[in-house]
Amino acid sequence: MSSPKGHIPTEKLDDLLHSVMEWADHAKIDGVPLETSEATNQTNQQNSPRDKSGNNMQKKKPFFSNFGNIVTTLVSAIALIFSGYSFYETVLKEAKLKIYAPALVHMYRKDFRDALAIPLTISNDGAKRGTILSIDLIVTNTETNESKSFENLYFGNNPKDTSRIFTPLTMSGRSSKSEVIMFYADRTGAFFKTTGGVKSHLNFKLKINTDTSENLFKPKQQPTLSFDMTATFIQSFRAMESGKPTVYYKNKTAKPIKTEQKKAKAQDPAPKKDEEPQKKDESQEKPSNETSAQ
Image (cartoon, rainbow, N blue to C red; front, side):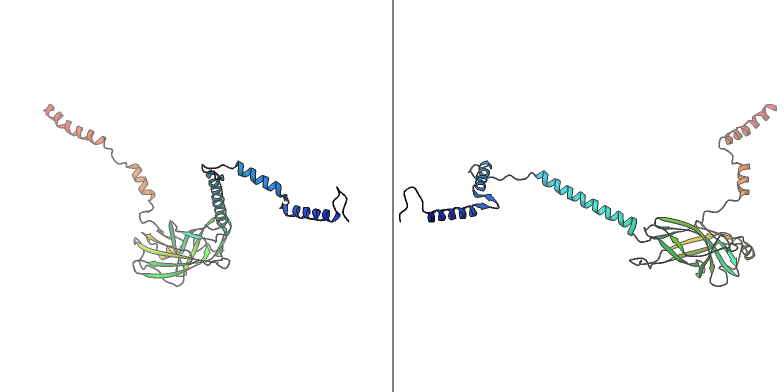
């Protein structure tokens, strides 16, 4: 049955509607209608710069923007490195102990053995604490090559001061400590047989034994110190046993000046150079006066 004029059959309308829906589905790209995306591309192509031959030229980013990003990245990396180094120096750095030589050493006698009073200064340059368990001392007579080992027993200035027994020293990070330690020879005897105005040269070798149980990395070697001392006068054994020490100086020329010598120099000052010509003039005037009297 033919349809009346001006009317479309329902089957054709269904086919047309179906084709329109398929076209709408294929026309969308990421939710944007195809017509819109094509129009945008056309406007971008029209607005983009072109060279002499008519080809499109894309705009490049300026050099300074890339350089600024590089500088910012480098500054951030350097700041991170410094922060890590500061954290290591203030928190993670292991204890680093140093020992410093004294200016003088006092030698005494106790129970037929040599006793040494040595003032020591110890510093810890690390961030963590360090503990000194003991100190080994070996003294060598440089003239006879005789050596003796000494052990640290007390804190004090002389053998009579035995109130403070040596105990391990704990050093906190970034700190220092000074103590006078009494060392006693491990056997009887003396370095010298004669006393009085005799020079004595001794070499001292100190080694610090520290606690390394808390360290992540064990140190290669314990802190050591070696120095030479000289004495220009040896006290008698009885005097050293009574408490009068033989003094060893680090510098051979650093000798104490007696007060009597200072007083003599103050009373008899050296003649000045300006006074010498006057004396010569007086001696020249005497013969002239004698000739005039004649």
